[in-house]
Each structure stands twice: as C-alpha cells, then as structure tokens.
Length: 282
Image (tube, rainbow, N blue to C red; front, side, top):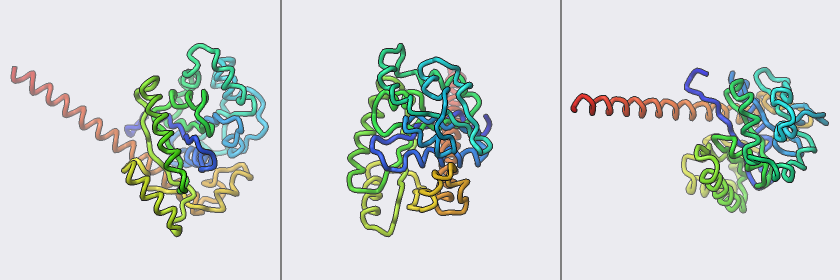
C-alpha cells in the first residue's frame, strides 16, 4: 500500500442518534473508494441503515453477525456495492441479539477485530458504522479500530455528548487498545447562517482545536434523498453540495494521514541519525 497509507480502520461513532453518523459512514466510505482507495464499509448497527444505504435490503445470512460469532469466515459475508472499490460487510436484524450473545464468548470485545483481521489486507480503509449507544458492539468497533471519527450536529446538547464519548474513547484506549486515536470531529447538518450553529462550532473548536475537521457537512436535501434510492449521495447527485462536502472530507482525511506518515518518517530518520552520531562519538 503505497503513499504512506497503512490500513486505516475508522469507527464512525457517537452515542447520540440523529447526528448523521450512518450517512457520514456510507458517504465517506464511498468517497474514499472514489479516490482510488479500496474500502470496506462494516455495518455494525442492527437497524442495517448503512446496508440499505448501499442498496442492500432484507439481507439473508451470512452477515457481520455470523462473523462476530465465528460461524463463517468474513470473506463469505462480504458483498460488493455498486461502486468500484467499495465492499460491504452487511448487517440485519439478527445483530440485535449480539449484545447479549457476545457477553458469554471468549475475547468478547475482540470479536470484530478478529473478523476484520481475516480481510484487512484487501483494503486501505475500513469504515465501521457503530450503533448509537455504547454497548458491546461499539466496544468491539473501538477495539478493532485505530481511529474514531465523531459526527456532531451543531446543537445545544452536542458538547455534552461529545465529552461523554471522549471519556469512553479514553477508557477503551487504557483498557484494550492503546493505539486508538481521535481522528476528528465532523460538524454535520451545518448551517452557518444560524447563530447557534456558529456558536456551537466555535465552542467545539475551542475545546478540541485541530481535531475539528476543516470540512463540514451542510444541510442538503440530496443527502436525505439518496438512501431511499439505495445510493450514497456522491453517486446519487455527484455535484450536490452534500456530495462535494463528502468528497472534500475524504480528501482531507487522506491528506492528514499522509502528513502524519511523513512526520513519522522524518522523526524516525532523525532518531536514526542521532543514534548514529552517538555511536560515532563513542
């Protein structure tokens, strides 16, 4: 995988519903595929909205549920989306029982990680759509991921929920996954004409600094219409404001990753240089 891009496993999470989480997971995954990066979208919500958003409705097994329980190899559950470079690991209503069933299994918090490991080398990005609550499924997503994207609607109670989620990410980092990082906070349904939206955006930037992504997702009717057609908005209406915003988001994440990779390479080279100098002065 060239260009300094290791496989990014990105959980799209927010404990609050109705913030554009699934919409963002579906459209970011599609936009990354359109940027030439083989991508897998994992639907980890029993409502299966991400699956239907890619045109897969009323799915028969195998789905992510059987993969979590170890009943089928992950490769058997993969579905092709209609978009080149984008695959789907779908969900259905069976997943609602997984919260309880996982509780009795060994390595219960690592079941998704084990399932993803089987196909990880096929993709440059794996995007996980988490359920809108912090239970065993979301824990599995955070343990399997190396980064978290938090979609956030610019409204009064948003910061409260954001603090709770940040605390949950910290707990997972300490207990299970030291590599877990906050990729960024994505402002969704953003309307800069309203003073409330601007105030909340300013507050979030004050608290989280450059973790707030430059790209924001506007309120856009095309984004709302696209799922009923079983398409991401980037395919349904590629020139709409919503589609352009999600393409911009994909480019911003790619750019951030490449910059981080280059910084690590420079730091590593400097470290090697310093150790070489030390050896020569001995």
